[in-house]
Amino acid sequence: MNQTARTQQEDSFNDLYSSSPKHSKNASGGWKKLLAAAAGILILGGAVFAGYSYYQQQEQQRNENNLLQTDHYYTGTVVAGIELGGKSKEEALKAVTDAEPQFLPKINIELSYEDKNWTLTAQDLGYRFNTQEVLDEAYAYARTGSDEERLKRIKELKASHKEYNLTPTHDEAVLKQKLAEIEKAVNVAPVNATVASFDTTTATFRYADGKDGLAVESDSLFSQVNALVKNNESGSIAVPVKAVAFDVTQAHLQGHMQKLGTYTTTSTNSADGNHNMKLAASAINGEVIKPGAVFSFNTATGDTNLPQNGYRKAVAISGGKKVMEYGGGVCQVSSTLYGAAIRSNMAITNRSNHMWQSSYVPVGLDATVSYPYLDFQFKNPTEFPVYIVAGMTGTKVTVTLYGYQSPDYDSIEVVSNNTGTVAQPADQFVVDQSLKKGQKVLDRKGNAGIRASAKRIFYRDGKVVKTEALPNSYYRAIANIYKVGPGTEGTASSATASSAPPASSAAAGKPASSAPASHAPSSQAPASSHTSSSQPVSSQNDPEVPDASEQVEAGQ
Image (cartoon, rainbow, N blue to C red; front, side, top):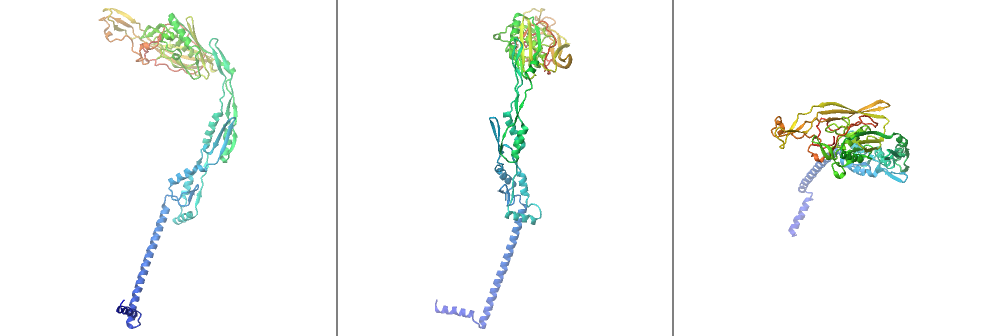
């Protein structure tokens, strides 16, 4: 710095601190400026401070409002050891529910019976927790009262957490179900005395005695287990059991297993027809019908249409006419079995009458078969097996059922009646080119129709105790059918006439050759009662629907 400049700087400093009038005036102006600046700074600072304080107040107010209005749990809310602060209701429920298993009681209960053992733990007892109830209580904390009171509690909660515990409760229904499963493994049903075998030749029974059963004492077992569970205790329990006596003794069976019902018909069939009857009777002989089971005639005999099964050609019904078919005659066996079954109180489940009334049984008491389409079936309604003894001696077919005789009755009478007739239809004509004009030959003889009803009457000590309806019957009214030469007078309808009446719904669409032949006519048979057991008979095919004229019936 040069000399001149230094001199000027020094003069300036001298002027600033000089006490001369000149210097005093200048100094006073500087201080005023400094004071004004300081005052401005103070004012600005105060404004800033005031603004900041206002902002803080507003922020605090917003925070408090948010706390009061939040739908989340408050900080310091602890359920089952889980901090729920800031969690929604859904989040809290999931968090606590996921943790429930760790709060199950430590239970271990050992059950035993002889060499069988079971273990019950808390997982088997259907425990439930009061989770939702506790969560609702925790959520409600600090949500009542004035805003000031609520905010105070929220602040205190943050500083000193509030804890809630879950309470587990076992489901007694689940426990009972678990014990029921154990009981099934222990329980042994009593076995009643029963028929060990039946000799069809001598018609005698051999019996097997009954055996007592075993049952868990359910109430006692439940009480013992439930007491441990309620106290959250473990322990060992021997499963309590008791003997269960069987109901039916051998002596009781010997007094009630007997002949139930029997029926006999007499054949007037050919030798081949009688052969078929004997074969069918032999097929059903010795059949055992278990309690509640259904017997099927067709199943027992097999296909009666097949010569390889031993069946021969004999008279049957097809197209409303008598024809020669394999198996002809077996319907007399099914009808004889029907007579025995209804007198033995079997429940008839499937039965159809013939197209014509049969000569070997009273009206309304026949049962036709035609393998595989028409079957005769009945159910054993008793709690004991039923045995069939069947055979043919000379021209007589006899079927007898053996089984349990109900004490509710001691005999059954079977009654049937002709309830009406249906007029024979007008003659039908079929043009036969081999005949001359004016020639007329009877191809099928017609007949009027018959309706019949039947019932069985139960007696005990000579008094009627019950009456049951049996299936009704309808024997078709069929027209005479003539073969005529072309142009024969009085046969104008011959061009469209059928050679047979329309087929019934039972056999619609089934070829005649595919069903078994029916058996030939037979002579009169007994019409009435025999002993049996009880239960209503079921229905047959609709009696108002014509029989299948194209169906081959194994008898007439």
